[in-house]
Length: 117
Length: 114
Image 1 (tube, chains in turn orange, yellow):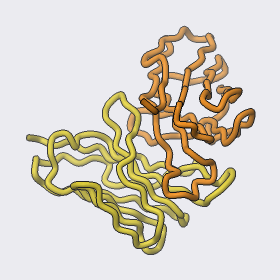
Image 2 (spheres, rainbow over the protein chains, first blue to last red):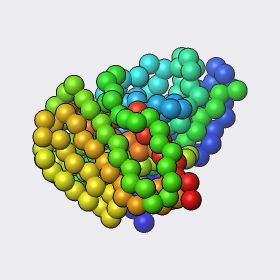
Image 3 (cartoon, rainbow over the protein chains, first blue to last red):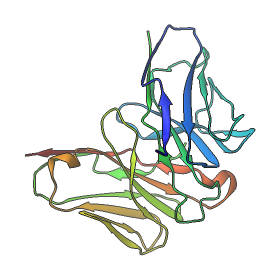
């Protein structure tokens, strides 16, 4: 089955530790995105990548890092510099970065809930 | 970061009632998307709109791309308990490059009482 997978579903971390969230897609999509969702709020863009080996900061990139070494993978690292990391993290992908075609909408993974203890 | 104005924030309705929610923006969008999110899950795309004035249906759901390109609405007819969830609108400012990002609304929480 084609789709976007995120792991783990739930993640607990001690304060001061870095943690990496996984996002994999087998849809052959060019673009991938990471969002953060807090209770009662919309999605805020952390980082995005339109092509392998390239990525751009979103609106709230501080305290996060990413890599895009393979087309199908876009891991997000939450570093100890992120002051308030407890949140629901969503990964998304899109067929083409341009978004021109009707089919080029973003599809989301199931999310990872990160809790910092 | 910019967010869309989405209203209402929440709705509590009886099964069978119709529902309407909308999003407005100060910016002109080329694309409007509507997603539904179940608790603890990722958003699922419901309807995509690509042209001003476009009216598109998906079963009991109907969405429209406003003529001004600054707003969109979503209607759900004859609601059922499984319609419960958070509905998000999202708009895309432009095609191509860094302007390809989606801007999301703050969500509408829908509760349906059987």
